[in-house]
Image (cartoon, rainbow, N blue to C red; front, side, top):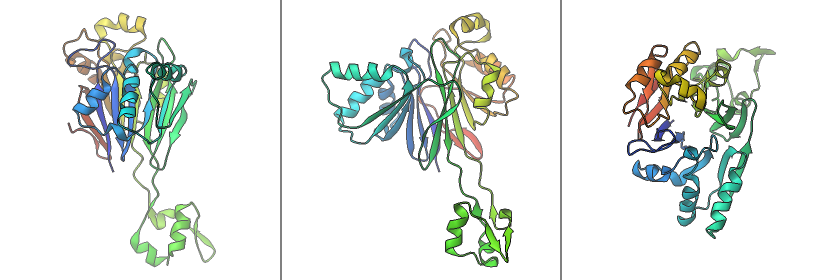
Amino acid sequence: MKFTVTILGSGAATPTLERYPTSQFINCNERCILIDCGEGSQIQMRKYKLKFQKIKVILISHLHGDHYFGLAGLLSSFILLGRTSKLKIICPVGLKEIILKQIEIGNAQIPFEIEFDEILLTEKALVFEDKVLEIYAFPLNHRIPTHGFEIREKAKDRNLIPEKLEEYAISVKEIGEIKSGKPLIRKGKVIPENEYSKAPAPPLSYVFCSDNRIQSKQVGDMKDASLLYHEATFTDKDKSRAKSTFHSTAKEVGECLHQSGIENILLGHFSARYKDTTTHQSECQEYIKNVFCVTDGATYEISQNGVEMIG
């Protein structure tokens, strides 16, 4: 099973030659998801040879341009490439009107179904699921309505112990019943499930938080992440700027999350004023051990063994 995160854009509002605006390509067990779509996102997907035609869901965090200005262009490319499969876009209220007006002005016809799900949440909620994964959204703390997202594998069935199948004479029919939640009964007694099966590995999850003025009350929405991405637009010396713009510093992210149980953090959305991110990393690592300052094109693999940068 595959669970990867590829960074298409790691910069903040002003693009640079090294850092495009925010966008990430997620492959969760061959389900392809795009989180945010800043200017140039489709160019980055081509550059890094990602299968963007297979994107099933697009998640847009908020209506600041560096997080969605690339969306109309991407949809136009889908039209030109003859896409026919349905696309779901989970986004803030107002984006549907913006995007459809742009396409209408260009006199283009959309040959595939787009389902817009406009959200404005006050608490964490399930916004999408299929057989493989679940997507949750939750409110963030920014100047305009903004959401974070969690992409989580569906919980797997318990693993039956082969030798116990014979010992308890478990039939094929009973295997199906066990997987649907029915108990195994022998001689009128319920057999404890740990007698004939093992618990599966816990589901892996990825949590995305940008843009956000981090608060301790938000930790509950993030704490189950196998890997967490959180913006760190500024370093501690610019904390007054972070506060006034409703962004976070790398130190604030570490301070807020150091007792959360989260072991792996990606930092991004770096202001163009910083030429390197060494200080961001060191400030956060005072509190969290595994901190990665992302760069455009970097790919991170999430597994039961942890998180590894693979590209």
